[in-house]
Length: 399
Ligand code: NDP
Image (cartoon, rainbow, N blue to C red; front, side, top):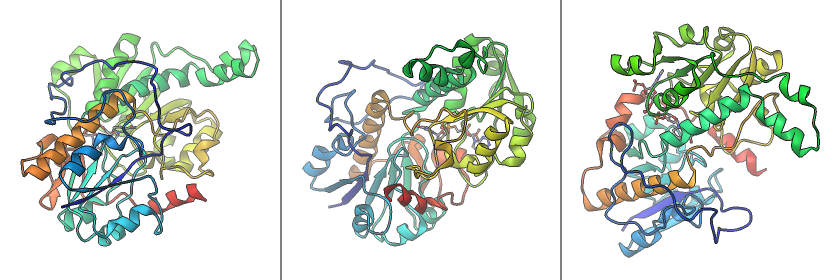
């Protein structure tokens, strides 16, 4: 029987919810490209309930324990004395969410001789040293599409909030103020602006589609070009390089995976090539941006605003400069873990585990690494290598 080690974020500070603001969530039958939603044989949770925290346990406890497996759930993930490291030595499967990632570095993989699968409850497996996983023949899977549209909604929300100066205006009201000029001296309309996405995959394309009714000029950079019909439908301008795109954009959104090719892509040199006063919204991964370069650009005015929900490492240490830099609209990593998204990825995790234990093939779209190589979606979107360097800093949050 297997030990399944699952790292989830803590329950709410007020305790695990006993009620929710809404009684149901909409039923979605297909993703925009026709991919079906997860199809597990069964689920043991109520859609719309909190599943991503420790007590929620992704709704897996009954399923795993009925099969005789050991199911360990913890939020204590960082540092050599963490509960996560204490359980690694005999874990066969590690489940982790990018929001509260259990960094599986090469050192940790070496401490887990029985580990056979790293399963991401969400999208983005950069918290796993993919190179080390390939060398150890560990299968890596994620739940492709489960929260892509959720993230795209967050991107549009944050773009508008930066451009329109929403957060400082909201803070005025809460603080009892009414100085209109304070609020509007940084407030613009997005209409007519040039907005570009780095990558037009599931999230990037959705962002472009959502933005079309705002009458903005839409741009994208991606390694693979979209079809002519999609480019035409949304009036998209494709750029052959990131540099070519950012120099004409007022707003840039980053929607590519983190892998060695994209790590620190937005550094001082890249930001200097952007239009002065541009905005960046990055919900992809914190490490795609150089932490200090972003803070410097906001201080100097090269950037007018920066928002997103992804940091490096996670949780962000108290002294992370993005907590205090000017004109930011950062949230914790939440865009892909709305209650709606959790329902989908919990079902996807259940589907992958059912396949794993029953010896059935896992869907190609959920595979990142298989048989020692990039596979499925992983072969399309990732490159070989490791992007976990520096993740041990996450321990600083506890101190
Ligand atoms: P997709 O796989 O659908 O899209 C990724 C896109 O990135 C693909 O079009 C891929 O291009 C492109 N890409 C890969 N490498 C590069 C590169 N070097 N330069 C430019 N483009 C590149 O994934 P999603 O859109 O669903 O998710 C994207 C990322 O967003 C995830 O990897 C994850 O890091 C992040 N994410 C964040 C969440 C959150 O809660 N904040 C939740 C979900 C995802 P091609 O395939 O054409 O080569």
